[in-house]
Amino acid sequence: MLICIPGKKLRGMLSLGDLILDISTSSRSSSLFSVQSPRPSQKFKTLKNISSCIHLERQKPLLVKQFWYLSLSNLALSSKIPTYLEGIRDSEAPSEEKELAEISNTQSIPEIGSSKPHEPLRVMDSKVSEILNILRRHFSCIPDYRNMPGLEVRISCSLRFESGAFTRMLGIDTTAGSIEEIDALPAIYATVLKFSSSAPYRPIPSYRIPFLLGEPHKNDDDASQNVSLSIVPFENGSREEEQFRASVLIKLEPREPTPGIVDVHIETNAENGQIIQGPLQGITVGIEDMFLKAIVPPDIPEHEIPHYNLDLFTALWEACGTSSNTGRETFPLKGGKGVAAINGTQSVKLLDVPATSLIQATERYLAQFVVGVTGEPLVHIVREGGIISNIVWKNARDPANDVTLVSNFDTGPLFLTYNGEEHERGSISDSRKRNLGCFLVLIFLPPRFHLLFQMEVCDVSTLVRIRTDHWPSLAYIDDYLEALYQS
Image (cartoon, rainbow, N blue to C red; front, side):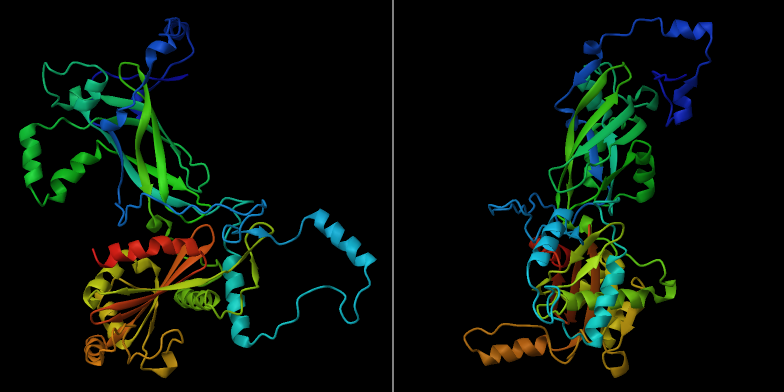
């Protein structure tokens, strides 16, 4: 039998083995359980202000803290799911519809030359055929979340609690002396964090923490001294604070790539035997949390992955265009009868940011999603940085290595002319004329969507061409790009 024995005084971080005692089945062990336990009403304690002393925080802060998310309801009278929410559908019609269709076909007289009411055959060139083959291969690796586990989004957090505020909340008198020694620090045991959200995510699994020691009390003089310091050395603070923090991993399985709020509820045990529960501060989920790398088929050799990612970007870019020939195609998914279609849309964003700042921000936040860099000046700058690697480098001046998506490097990005002032038009054109090159960014949005950036980098501005097969995500991309490059 295994029981947990909370000690009154603990030195340092105790392992789980220190907290568990193996008791053999003997006559003495029965006496342990003969003691009458307190009534549940005496041990159970709900605290509404527990979030004032127990904190669950993100380890990586968001660029954009979005306190809203786009919720689209079906305003139609029918119960059919709208097309913008119908991410995955069955490839075969239900059996009842099949039987009705077969009965109607047998009772009707078929027309000459057409035995089935299919759409007319389309003429497909080699380029469209190659694009469809790439897309079919890509979608065959995306799991059908209706029949198997979907793709997860993981948010790393840390849990901590303040010793002084925690003991005062429990009604323990601390006026006799300040909490300074680890021997006197409180601890919590068998903590369970439960998560819920109104956003379109699957039920979020809970997270368990065996033991956590409270943070030492800080005097007012120490607190004021820490506030006055603008730079804190890593070696002095971070390693000491790790023993008072517990890592927490929140696993989300989105049904739609939208931000939201994850509500947190804690249940834990104090040293005095009280079972404490209450709500904590929620965790904000941003659109950037939905950014994943595209799935690579397992049969692709490692040295061919950069070229595969670039080919996938090209295929998705064409499929999400307004003049795409793939709009009526459906692509089977992995693990089931589900199929998905691409309904693309596009947008444009002009960023008045110098090229140096834009390149640095791209290398810091989007390096893992860059699949190609074009243009000799930009290729030279990015290669010298050494942060972005394992991609396809294209020199626009070499016709053999030119990328069909990016052309005309002699003209600058899009600009507007007001009141026909040609002299101002010429000055703007001269200042933004030199085009350094282009970043090609491929982002996967679970459960099956995509976000594509074609960033034409100039000296003082950048034109971002955006294409996606999930148009509601455009509502968040504008704020994200503003925070990413203009903060």
